[in-house]
Length: 289
Length: 213
Image 1 (cartoon, chains in turn blue, red):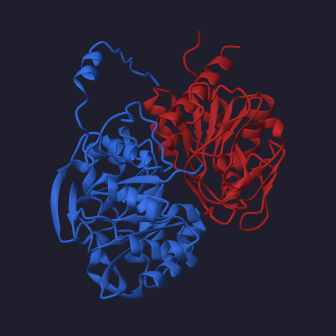
Image 2 (cartoon, each protein chain N blue to C red):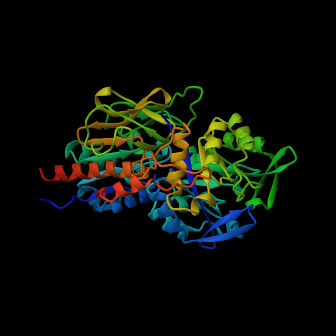
Image 3 (cartoon, chains in turn blue, green):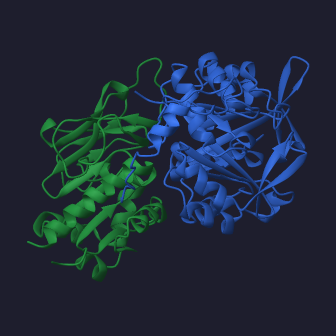
């Protein structure tokens, strides 16, 4: 059975991984390749690497960061940031990305989406629809929220899918970095009009938010940014909580917290004294691949 | 005992050869990315990756001038080969992806668009489990419910005899095939985390075994 995906997002600004808040405030985390190595070990289903520096669009993709991150990924790696030509897509795929994500270059004219889909296949191209809510409308933006397109979220989704986008990312700028949950209604709007996989992004602050996204919509995946950078094994905890919430999800890591208790904020609770005492004599041989 | 044989990751301009090399490096395998006749002739095994469209893949293979050599190495000298995703599909006779194209014809069968039911989206992208139908050096180390990463819209139609494992998406399709020294997976082992690394280790072990004979 096809599993829902939990995608770990790494936002990079000037070569440093950062947390993003509403596309305006950025807090440093550390070296992108180190963050990627952790997410890879913790069983992220995919890694989404986005270079979001100001001026990135004219500078082109950050191949140096991409190469370092690609080296530590044993899961699919999607790269976004600064792509506006087919030649750059070629450079990005040669540097180690499996898929590209387009945002600014995809709208209002999706010809680049068409070209990439024709050369690399739809499966290689995702389009990220970043939007803000204006009253009851959802309007799409490019350039990390600085450039407004005259397109509603649903119209943009239809346009990009028709142009050949293999997957769509639905990202609420208003919810970004707030940790208050995904814009489920917005994501559902796109899921309902698309026949390609749709992934929700922006707003996860608690594994329950991911579970809510999966139980509330047919979204194929949940993209998680800031939330994963706070705790050890964050990806594993989130997946474990989704699984016990009844979602079909991959949980193949040796550590899977299947019988561990979590609190309401999704934090691991200490094991019982008895369990801890028994752990002293458990031998876990390291697997040599 | 021979050292681990050198495996050539065939570079024909399609597919992320870098990912395959990264995975092989993590396993400590001796691999090289190449399309040169010299490298191909000296290979102890081949990995044929592939991302993109069938027609373009065949055109690139033709342009690289390596089709006859690959067929000879695989069919006559019986060198092990592992095809991945599009690299699995081109092993067959033809495909109707964006036109009508002939494949390498190393295995009997064809490639056709996946037929999905109402709530199955195309492309088939994400993690899915498989049902292993025949014992195989590739899957010996993985639990039966392991997940692998798929990303495709087309599937192979071939005889059950060569199907090692199936996946039940889109009405069911071959997730892995084997005919003698030719192996292939529709999923991406280099992108399937630990389960995928074990599959690659299985192939590498087979190459090592075969090279001792």
